[in-house]
Image (cartoon, rainbow, N blue to C red; front, top):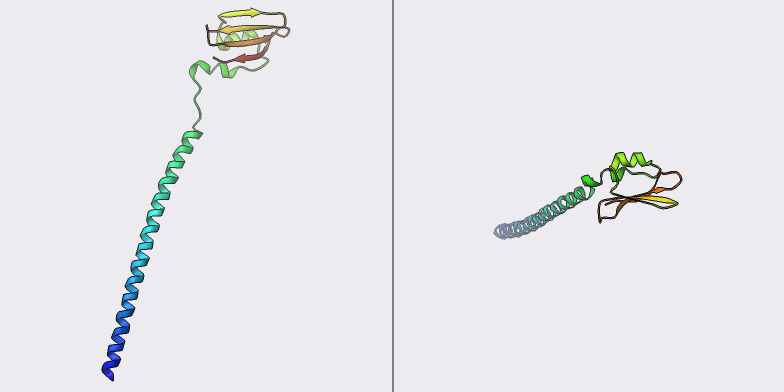
Length: 124
């Protein structure tokens, strides 16, 4: 009878250790999968952060447009000449005057005829 008890106890221990080994293998597999998922997500986050930094980087204004971006409605002709230099073409009409800059790019500044201040412009 004692031999049967030992045999039964040994069988239970072997069965339990097999279950434990299976459980450890299963847990280890799950941990490995989770670690790989975390690495994948970290790479995706790094990529998205890089894209966000590039998108949020202050756009640089080309040197030829820096002074054009300083134009405001209400500036005088003298103010515009200090910013942009002398115009290459001047067209005067009764109610407004247009100063042209350059040959074909359409860059111009429009002045109100009465106040002789900037009323609009088109950058190069």
